[in-house]
Image (cartoon, rainbow, N blue to C red; front, side, top):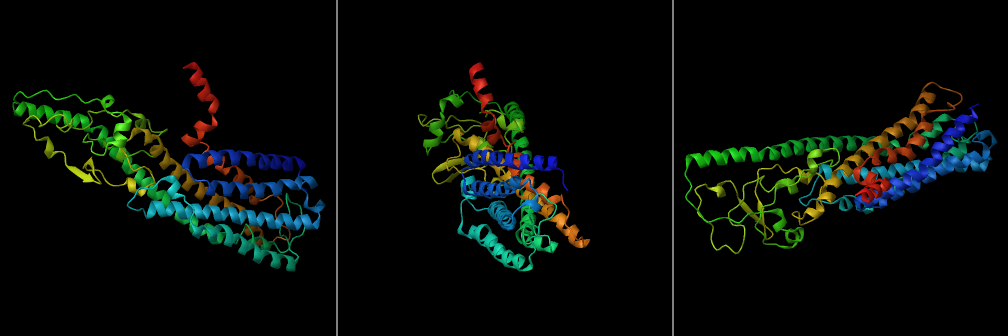
Length: 421
């Protein structure tokens, strides 16, 4: 018999994972602006952990559980596990569509994870169909028999578990795992390209300064009228957001947000107005630009898109492959925090998908070994019990370190910093 201390530990881990899952996924849903996926996962995870914890009424000993409760616990575990798999499969379809087949419009997180009617298939149809197959087969075989375990399950024959979490869920798990792996590889490659491009733009001012010095030495510049100085304070945030005819060139950081704003110190660098050469016409009050021997217009090409002037810099269009920004006015600095925190959210979501599908493989491992070795009784404590706890604690492990989520969770630190400031 399994020691009661082990049952108490597993009961505590399972029960405490319920509030942790709700807190983290609620904050995560608020950060990305999409609630259906995180909330559905919380519901099915609560159902899974809750029916498991109810076994403590009978000391988590299936031999003491009534037959009706034993059957109900088995089928609810199967349904909740398959439903959680369906939610992760819907996540996979959403993120893979955005990463591998991006559209011309850069989507936001809420648009990336917007509800689609096609998600009814993995979330509703699949678990109900699997349950409709498992119930009559297992009841007709009288497969649900109490043995030494932490919860009731199909035991005679052991392969009856393949109709639940250990087998039929692989219909979604296997293809979605490979889709998530391909999407993760794509995100990692785009992330590397963006880092290289950002390093190139950081080193740009030094090379441009050397070029200006060389041109000044080669060609003597005649005196010209003084040019108005440009300073970021002269152009407030609202002016960038509302003025459709503004000719001030915005640096390419708006076109190239970082994947992780908290771990990359370069993402917090202030925007320097000397990073790129300025056009001569900076104010509509100037009737004509002053003559200059340096053909600055040869280094700058204006492209009007939808009535807005933007610099045509040689930057690879990689940001369209990730849901970086959901705003149409990219020159407004007040949206930069949202755009920079969006890519790590998608990255963590892909990691969570892959982790969940690995947990699914872990849940099936003990059953596969028991069937392959022709055991008469299933393993009392198997990998499915470890997978059960990981389903509840997985969101906290993966999303708890996301900057947008961590700032909300450690709210007392913000209060202390505001008081000290």
